[in-house]
Image 1 (cartoon, rainbow, N blue to C red):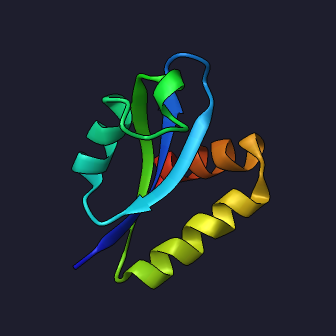
Image 2 (cartoon, helix red, strand yellow):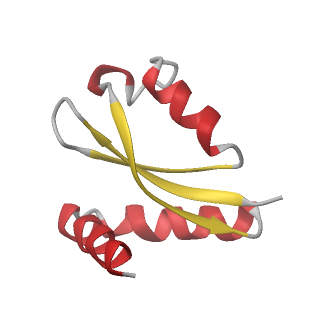
Length: 85
């Protein structure tokens, strides 16, 4: 079963959240219903990017790769690049 790395953007303050999950739709719903501590105060969230991975291990590896950049510019470049494809 596929796993996903996803990026959400807060409508409230424009910040990004990077995560991974097996059920993308359900996970976004949890974020927007306030069931995730970090994202609750920044609701609502919009899915702006996702990647599919064959297993949890590769998804988590990619999630950490993006998070370790700690860069809004990197995320925005990733978003621009993905839209051009």
